[in-house]
Length: 203
Image (cartoon, rainbow, N blue to C red; front, side, top):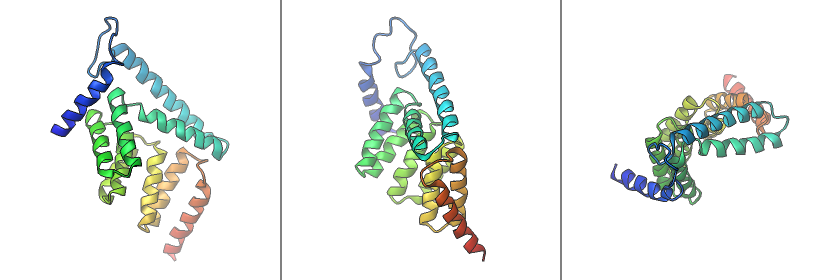
């Protein structure tokens, strides 16, 4: 809790300049105005819905890939200014293979916004790389509970299941991914391969 309080204080300090001078508008915790926060949140939700619809109707893998990237960026900033800063710090740590530090940043983001699905997804990835498979699976399952269209979490669940030889779970997760993202790269080929693995277990 002490570490989180220090981290939060640093995030607030980083935001102070950008969030100053709102011309008398009413503030909410974190420095944003209620009006701008509501407008931003509404726009982001509309953007996410539109991107998900476009992803499901994507005509090819290249289009799907571009939409995946846009959705990932939009989800990352959907939690607000402070959580976006925490996520950015966590992603830098993840890239540097500092998995425990990354997980801590994502945990702080979850503490600020407990329904922030993308933070659960990224913490699951960090925990998996740190060797905490049970923790990773719990986080990824929570991510898809909060956001049933989180194709990246379904992909991670499938990858973990494959690494453990759990073909049925991998196949189920991959089917759910394709329901959201039918044109994901190599999606149909992997589905066929997984189906063969599952069918082989039934022999």
